[in-house]
Amino acid sequence: MEEIVRTNDPVLISFLESILDDAGIKHFVADGNMSILEGSLAMIPRRVLVDSDQLQKARMLITDAGLAHELRPHSGGS
Image (cartoon, rainbow, N blue to C red; front, side, top):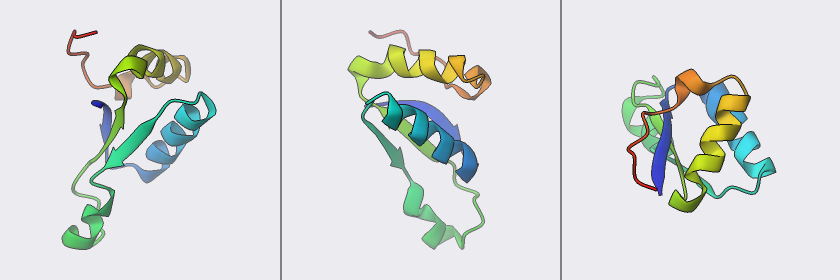
């Protein structure tokens, strides 16, 4: 899996999950339970990860939703 977005915004994460779910793109939100350690201060960003083979499709959907500025830089791979 590859990181596509890193954010502290729970609303953005929920929206991204909805977009990815609707498109059938497997994803995982890493560090979601870190709020227990940080005291719910949202200081540790959550990372949205997608399967490598669906990375381009996910990037396109997020861009089409007007959120290209939230995307992590593309590492170049596949």
